Image (cartoon, rainbow, N blue to C red):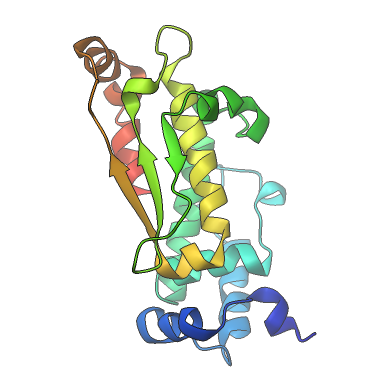
Length: 198
């Protein structure tokens, strides 16, 4: 199996969409991944964030940043840097982002993934904050669980090309929940806004 095939398994309509909308070129894909790898290995902006030995630089991981920025290597590098800088800056809140640490987040039903994609190929994630048991678990667990959930979704190449769609259902959200979020460190420090921008 050729290395290019190992890096990406998309084909058919998904590959055509990647070529037309994301400017992906299978013949230059590996070279652009290597270009991005060289930039992130010497990334001064990311210094002081996550230990460079703990930053992923494998081809599959780097490819998702290139797709997110339509194969603009400099913009992909900036996104990569932001990804690790955010996690380092808020390590005290986000913890280690180990999947098992967030089992309670997924069991409560506040976030879920629909079984089928929408008509454009997007995965659909549903978020119902009223189901979050604020009296039992801190809001930081919900945010950490959301980050872990999104990280897993973005590993899927179909999602990298087609994107994700979010459905927010605020039915049943109490004033207590609204005030708790508004008064939280996450809101006061601007972390929720920062999270959206990353």
